[in-house]
Image 1: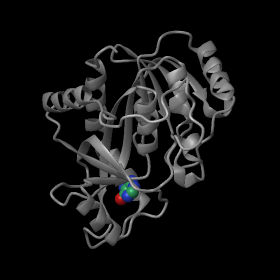
Image 2: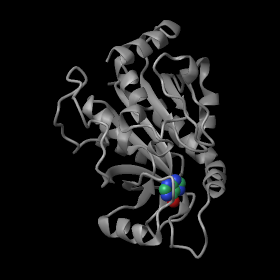
Image 3: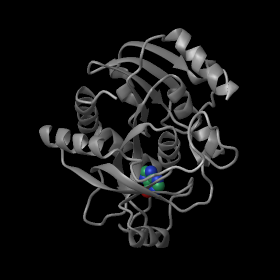
Length: 272
Ligand code: HPA
């Protein structure tokens, strides 16, 4: 808790004002942070207690400023379980956001498309998630001042924000899907059999992020919206191998739609 408070105090000194929304930018989507106006840029290296990301395509800095009239804190680069961080470390920045008084969270990611009726390049609003691996960011002593030991996940992905995202997508003529995101630890992509299992389990997309963050956010009572960029068909659907370049390329291809959607959502984001 003291470490978290130290990180939050460091950021608050550099940006004392109220922040409306925390945003986590996924693989290939980090450029959106360049649109933030009057930005205060803070490298993760400089924040006491903060982890420092190593994933390709992730930069590792906080960008705080104005986007569509709201004050946002963007994470350009997140922490993944596959990098070797513990789940607690993965969600550390989300906890810092909460200590900074941020009540709303927008999580974005690149994900593999499991739903065979959809295609690479589609955007998906996350309605719910599946995490079958045993680890959990809340495992261990409960930080009572942040949230309760046992807590409800029924509204982990805020229904009002899902409706808002759908409405904004329609307004911008962006074809958006809604579905279930299933967490896999990575860094190996899933096997075709795992993808068949994910589909049977009810997943529409698979990925290596977002779920720990959504759990921590729910624990702390934050309202969360999740949007996936489905960068590739998941393993075994097409007769081709998966690679990270395809993930980044598709991210690039849909960047315009993605950022238009995110900006429109932020512009109409309801005050908490
Ligand atoms: N699987 C897991 N994570 C991913 C994928 C995938 O196919 N694509 C982008 N992130």
